[in-house]
Length: 341
Ligand SMILES: *[C@@H]1O[C@H](CO)[C@@H](O)[C@H](O)[C@H]1NC(C)=O
Image (cartoon, rainbow, N blue to C red; front, side):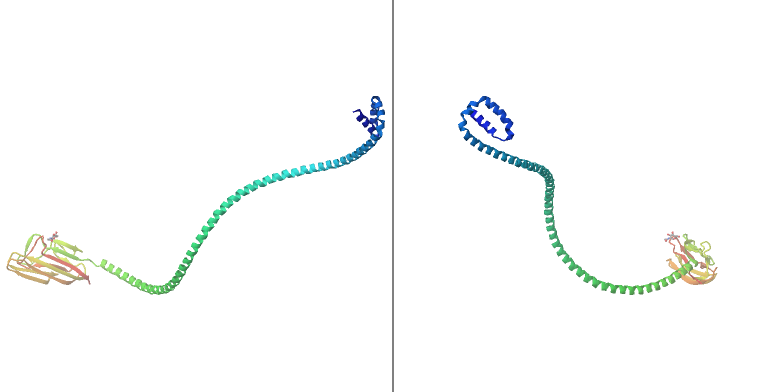
């Protein structure tokens, strides 16, 4: 231990001016503690010196190396600082990149979802497209058929068109003919209407005269020694009131042609039946029958007479003869105006 310390003392004593003050303190200590030991070991000092020199060289070398290493260390530290700064920057960029990556991942995830959805839709669309293709094929076939039909129809239509044109021309001609006919008919209708109006007027203006009457409900009418005017009391018709059921006379209301007729009956006796028609007391017709077997006999006749206004017509039963009538109306007198003059 002591030898080592001594060696160190020596070593330090031979060191540069830098360590000199420290050396003095150590020398002082060594002088007080081990002067004798140092003397004993003088013989070995030469070797030691040599070793010490070698050591000193080594130390120097080491020092130089140390300086060198310090320089290196400094530069390394600088580099390290730089690297740290760079690292920080890189870290920041990394964080930023990570953030971006996260964002991109999120976007990516969303896009993936979208892609999946799109893939599903694509599959559906593909199926639809396939179906549509099928339909299209079917429709094309149909379309071809329809085209063929349409062509047929067009041809038929053209034929019909020409027929229609011909028909239209015919119709036009017919129209013209019919219009002419219609005009003619209209003219004739107007004439006819005028005629009808005139006739209507005439009929309205012409007096209506017609009568028919039965003799009596009370059985026999007996003439005495002279002719007896007959009064037909049972009125069946008396349009115009020209016949009087009180006097038995017909009085002409207008100038015209009249027709008169009678049927008279008798029964249950033997003898003559005589009837006379008179116009203004002048005899016109006389009818007589003889009855001998108590069966019914009839006297009847008719005449067309022109009469002036106020002319009278009546019937008489001949003197000594008789007539019969009851509710059966077997004895009647009738007359009417045929037309005016
Ligand atoms: C005779 O004439 C009257 C009207 O005057 C009528 O009521 C009656 O039925 C007629 N008699 C016959 C048998 O037709």
